[in-house]
Image (cartoon, rainbow, N blue to C red; front, side, top):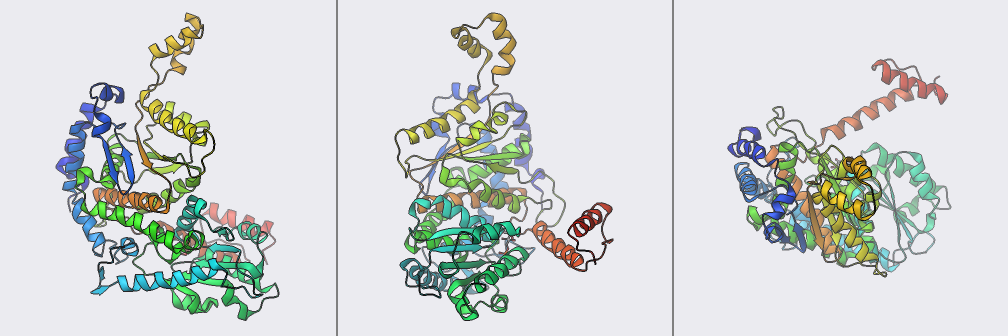
Length: 550
Ligand code: G6Q
């Protein structure tokens, strides 16, 4: 396999970077009035303005050639077709089948997976409808008022983010809670807010072996049984979302209360499966299907649009451009939408777990830098915190601004101000403020020449900081579905270019393994000597201070 850095297009881009690196974004806009019209795209209800990037027609042509050289189209098609795109775990990655609203067959090992997908969706509809309507009763005959999702990582971040994002569509009676951390405080503080006879616990775990989730689930069950409930009442209050029937049954959850999915659904891609149950309960199955439809629309766009008009491909190419040629290894997600406050955290897992890799698909050491650090918080809050570094720090941090044009909570001038701030930030990042502009501004305010001179370096901004702006009309279930699918495919295209496997996570597995073995050692209540001196020292300190040594 040719490594990315050996491709002709890669070498051309490296040379092209030297040609364009000193051309400012200001210059690019001044020399082309049609830049906004030229560098924009529409797909599945999402508008993308990518004109405020360090790209010219030539840059784009070179990047598109890189996508061609990297077989991006073929690789995308392999994923949609259910081929083994996750070779280290020997699996396809078919989250797209879960939202395949066209219902065309998707074959895995000679079998169409769609009837299974549709069956689970139908069961989920019956169950979630009955909880929402109040027909599903707790053990004292009362309807459910609170739902506690117990899961972590992919079995937590997606449902939590989406329930928050679609809060305006939430069911009035159902309060949603999420417990992920094995820190007992998370469970204890949640249980204080709910009553055993009106609470439904969802134990969400693909493997049903995850230490944190099982520990939390056991504690929740003990708490439930400490009320007047008995073992036979558990089935009215505990359901499982998993691929592991045996472990679910061993835990004591009746498999009639289990909603399955398949090993070809990666944890961080599982929101579209039964793992989405908290969202189904919150917004109802009809709206959940609109959510699936939005993602499917983006899937169709990704599969069919030419590379030059393909939104996830363009976004991925921009990330590769900055990450590999501009040495910009950090990417800011700035949703100007309070409901999207968990979206950056969700994308952090999606992108960093997928593309945080140091070997190529064939196992050879990586030849280029891979996934950037992804982070963020909603605007306008970020402006009063870390945006200073994005404006004037020494790092280039490409930024994605995300906003809905219409508010779901119109309130006076609030939404206009939100939009104004969003547009102002991307403009300020790009334009900066020249010394001449500062001089005029300070002179108008009556500053002396000496004062202007003294502050000139501090108060002028180089600007030239790139950003994308993504707009939807309203943050509806459909729009959210399309937005998530857009980033999923962007991550896949980046991985295709870097020639890495975005679907495994051996680092996560290592963490799970080590925590388990240290815990087993701690349970022996004896001084631990088997690790390095730091790890031994920390474990022994904890054992001693908690009086756990025999
Ligand atoms: C996701 C990761 C990881 C996983 C959690 C929970 O892609 O593999 O975040 O989702 O470790 O795993 P379970 O769902 O199996 O409990």
